[in-house]
Amino acid sequence: MRLLIFSKTTGFRHDSIPTGVAAVESLAAAGGYTADATEDSAAFTADNLARYAAVVFLSTSGQVFDDAQRAALKDYVEGGGGYVGIHAASTTEYDWPWYGELVGARFTRHPRPQQGVIHVEDTGHASTAHLPEPWARFDEWYEFSQNPRGRVNVLLTVDEGSYEGAEMGADHPLAWYHELGRGRAFYTALGHTDESFAEPAFLDHVLGGIRYATGA
Image 1 (spheres, rainbow, N blue to C red):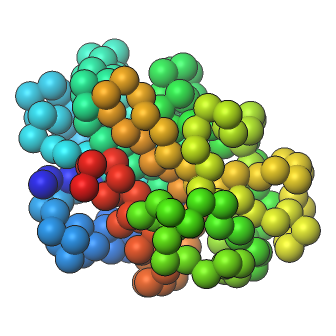
Image 2: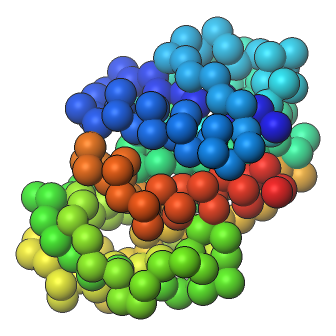
Image 3: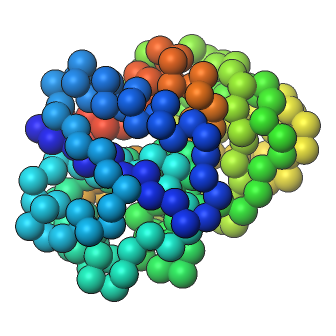
């Protein structure tokens, strides 16, 4: 199976993107996938997307598509394609309501990156079955305009008492999955730092999300 890794930014650009692309390419290869990486929105056509089992949005930001590219992505996912969003993927295409539905929630703010404690809510999913409970790690703790619970299947939450500057509330999802049309979508808010992409537990978390999105 083939993956398209997409990391175009027109808003904030994470320094970790090159490290993340290389890590996801290696992860894909180890998992039996062939991966292509691009920052060219022209890759989003019906014919080209038909070649891929899933698209991986790696810390994309801002408006990255024209109307035809939006339509191609929507048709691709609703027709059975997979979507994986990592970290800043939730800061992308704010003025396109369908993309908000796809990613599951819209990023609003974060305090400074720091150590925090994650709780595994669903231990039966491919992206979480390997994780410790609790899972303590360093990251940038994203908050969202609306809690996605009820619209998605929540996998991970963060304990807001474990770090400083939290404002989202006691129920603070960080990773989730859901179906959209005939397609499958997975999102994780983790992955701010270069170090994340050398962390086996995080990489297995991403690979499990890819496996879900591709139906593997």
